[in-house]
Image (cartoon, rainbow, N blue to C red):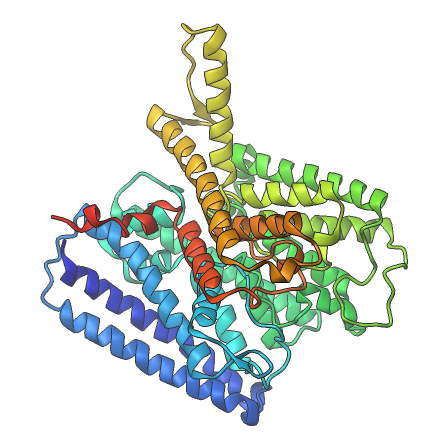
Length: 530
């Protein structure tokens, strides 16, 4: 194992994290809405974090200065999860150094900070913070840093590094890992060009959404933060009520803002390669893509079911998650508003963004089952959404049908295809193994937190409610969705959990972001042996 080369690359990642922290510093200035009384701890915390990241980066680069540049398979496999681990640890420093309070009088612990950093970089969007709108508890500079972690994790730190630095043959493996195989085939130059295309589309979409929100009356700070969160399909908001906050702002068109968020969440869950063809005036490529059409069909069908069942069970209210006490849930919602709320929540969960406009965990059982299903499915390969991915489930379905046919037609040989792509047996086996591994991981995480988490939070609901809440949150962590059900639902946070559970969930987010295999691989002693 070429450890010097690994350390050299980790040093670059540390400098990359320091650069991200620099983006948050200007928001402490009074001209950008900051109040030095509240922003001073945030600015000092960021400066200390930047110095720490630079020091770590310099030490790693110094250790790896004489490294052999010959990168073998083991090193390239090790670099990706180790880089993510380093990024998560460094990303936790601003929360610790700035003295952010999880709740009034309760400073964030190490496990709190790691959880928040992992949630941001893996674009999960779960949080331990109870009051995002109180500058006494969390400065604006740190709120912006939370959004920046979504920006950096959206397409993956590795993809951004390949796009910016052009790491030759290293980029090929990084791109395969970070995009789930999208754009596979070609030389390292092809992969670098592909990374540049993805990064460019990503940044342009973020800029476009921020500009639209600003034009609709949203402040520049909130517009940029929500653009970062939306395109990264992360879900961190600057408001306690998430997107539902805008319904309480009488000077804003909340319905139009929600539609903008819906559009860009949908784009974030789409394969960015298809968006490139759309920009190049070749829309037929998108509409002929079987994964994208299935993605669209699932959203349409799920929205219709949630809408109809919601009307039957009276789930909807006019004002979403606003904290205003002037509005009553008894007021009936217009059909269009109910449909928009259904569409918003389906896309938010399926793209694993996790934004909310209502306490959806209190909706009817049919809707809750659908949310669990679409959260498991996730978005398209090559997008920023998490989950199992639509293409993988399409391949698994095709495999199941072929195996079923073999029972009564054992001699029939069929070509295995997904659109124009021919699938070999290795691909079919790999997808089936991944889905089994995903289900097993969710099950193990659920069992672990059931054992470790005391039942005090669920005394009123009992054990069945506790099981559902922890299962939904475990599924949410592994698939990088964000909110769960019940005490861990849309209006709640994960700060009530024990320290060990937060660390387990942090590892679950990290493992889910890297498709499970790599994080567990580096935990194997055999991997590090010669």
